[in-house]
Length: 291
Image (spheres, helix red, strand yellow):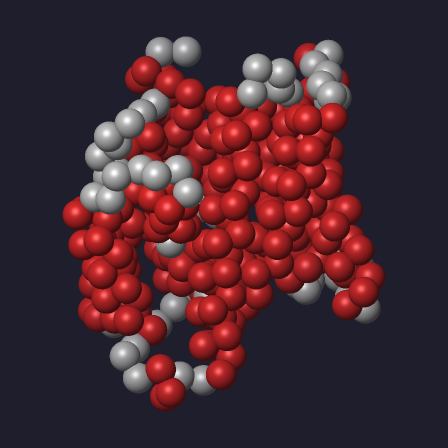
């Protein structure tokens, strides 16, 4: 794969996963059940690819352990994110989830002993300022459900950061599964966890109508399957800074889809805050490495 081809694939992958919150909003099922079906349909789709290519789905206990941890983290990520979508809307929930870049940077500084970068400090302040512009400075004036949605969105960022760290570690191992094989195992594990969650919550697994079925299947196949497998294959060929910039198409487009499809009320301050937050996420995510 050439560099230009990898860039093109990253763009396509980012566009595909940007529709995730749209499919969640269109599916008339609970947040846990939406996550279950995303992973189930995505896992089936990925397993079909693995079987057709005769790739293995077992490479030993260590790769499975990584997949298990990643699956748990991803299930927690979806649990928080889907609830955030219902409270604050698809675009806002996706923007909040992309604050994961700062948690990843903090992990690098505190655990991996990476050098602190002044750009990281500035971008953190800018991102917080952008978040305040979007949600309003008067926290107490916000409805309790909206405040809960914001907190769940930030929890999404934390769990997603854990997922990415484990996934990157697994992919760096000498003995590892193929990209589709690893994602298939992770998806099935996440689906099983969310099924158990659904049972404990007393949630109904019933999908009420054709629109919901179509949305959930598209959610699993397009976002969990196609989107992430395209991204995971292309990431190897693209610098992290450039990849981070391209993948920010996801929250940017998700915010636009929220306005286009769901008529999200938006004023100039919202747009400015979203732009500032996204710029800060990119600015912080592309800080210079001194390794």
